[in-house]
Length: 291
Image (cartoon, rainbow, N blue to C red; front, side, top):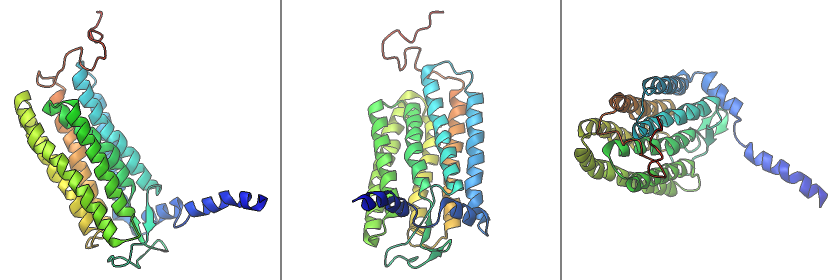
């Protein structure tokens, strides 16, 4: 029995190390003719870092707890993004996956291995960053936490099913089924933004700002499934580098641009945004200063 026990960790380690290593993927992206792909990662790290610094600087004078909550949600969008893009840059969240039979890229080779480069780290970005986008949008619209958390749950489900679509190698049909399922979850979120939150923003007095934010967000978010369909994970009309740049540009629009538009509005702490000193307090009166 001893040899079997001793060999178990080695077998597990071998299974985890199949395909190119992080170092090999890093070399593939940054050491060869993949400058376009590499820039799609690095530029977003720089923009996320600048956005974090901008939020800290512009939000330094905020006093209202509701305004601070929105600013914090906006900050966490870029905190997640800079972490995730660093994972992509290092090769940690890249993989080479062999597509199922019938896929346009079945039989392709990447970095000396059979398969296509899949940037699955992007799905981690979206899973953890889109809830903060929705929290900020929902609060600006004046929505309640039930609707906000509902959209967060649906966006997490959308991103997880998108990840499943990207990583499924057993069946081409199942890849597209995951994609359709995620698209249904996406349409639920779109409905809440365009219908419920639009009406609530009218009542709250933030409709002008919310109109701009919702258009950038919804139109931008429709671009993601379109890129998925056209990219290497879908029908492979676009190559990996172009697809990556498409995702990166959409991230710039729906994250950093949306962040600064929202932040420039809330820094003045208008009445339509502020919630008073008791906002978010678990005990009434506990938010009132003793000064």
